[in-house]
Amino acid sequence: MTEENKTYIMNLTVADVPWHRLTTAYGRGTDFPTYFKTLWEMDDLDAVKSALYELTTNMEHQSTLWHATPFGMVFLTRILMEAFEKEEANCVAHFLADELLDFMTFILQCFHDGDEMEHADPLPFFSDMLKEEYLWSEEYDEEEDEMRYEEDEVFPDDLFYSFYYYSWQAVLAYKDKLEQCQLVEYAPKIAKVLVEL
Image (cartoon, helix red, strand yellow):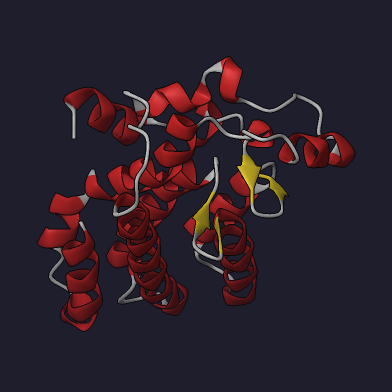
């Protein structure tokens, strides 16, 4: 991992990302900031379950990752670290940590599966995925988006592979924090994530 990419990942804010212009499995990531806020607060189990479902089903579908996925992984990894801090006194945090570790393992497996196939090189920098040429229209139009999906090359090869590569990098940036976690209950699941890194 380059220092520039790690610095970008560690300093990225939710507001830096034009979620409404990033594709997901079922549309665009417009509501992602609201879901992240719900997870971060960890005070309503039903709301957290609902938000987590929306995020995970939109970030991955049948092992396909989307434009919003690597950015989503940055914030889900941070939320996991926060859940580790709160899990002893917070049953919602306890639930969330467990679920996020499973999801991370799966996303990392998607990366490795894709990495074994022939693929383009990723874009040089994580931030390259937010270049204007790769973003979708400001205004969401379902019909227009569907027409774009019918194009032969809806995502350039290097951009598409970057969805996988940088989803992995988003978790890799926090490898040291995962290794330092002393919560015995999560040790087997953390070990699975670390194997995939």
